[in-house]
Every structure is written in C-alpha cells, then in structure tokens.
Image (cartoon, rainbow, N blue to C red; front, side, top):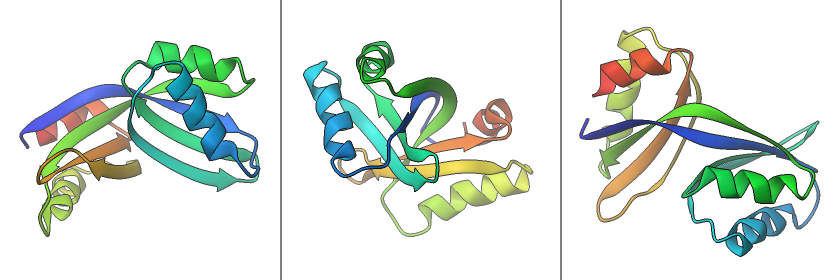
Length: 131
C-alpha cells in the first residue's frame, strides 16, 4: 500500500438525540478543527462518534466542554485507490495475517483516492502487513 500510517482517532460518546451531529460538528468548526473522516453510530448508551481530525487536542478540549466522554485510540489509516476491489485487497491481506478488524470506515481522500480507517486487534502487525 502506498500510504499507511498509525494515527489517533477520537471516540466521542454523546447523548442520542436530534441535532447531535450538528452540535458535534459545529463545536469542531468553532474550535477551528478540520474533520478528516467520521463514523457515527447509535447505541443504547448514546451516540458514538469516531473522528479523525486535524487537531485532536483542540477537538478533545472543545468536545469535553459539552460534557461528552472523549478518548483517543490508535487506528491505521490507509490511502487506497478508488477502484473496484481495492478494499477487498486490504481485507484479504489482513485476513491472511490473521488480524481481526474491529472497526472500519472510509472517506474520499482526493482525486481517485480513498482514506480507509481501521482499528484492529493488532495495529502494529496490521501496519507491518500493509506497508
């Protein structure tokens, strides 16, 4: 893979209520933090945001002022080509290395590129496998 990095994402637990997406993203915007990638899900304990930002420290401080639980966790980011089968190749490489993927999401990363964000049971081994 051409661009594999170990990075830190923020996991944010929020209330599960109307307007929460706007509140979280507005808080980041007001803090001057750019959002690079995002995955949002709803759970019985509340909303769960996984955020890859331009400045995790500023983002965490801003989101904590709203009373949200915020924690940083290690993830891999992989830039892959925007073509049929590119994600399958990453999945096959990790599967062959017996690496379990806990979370995966993706976003556009520019012309003909996708940013894939992965949290695995063995991020160091996954990094070595994909680089």
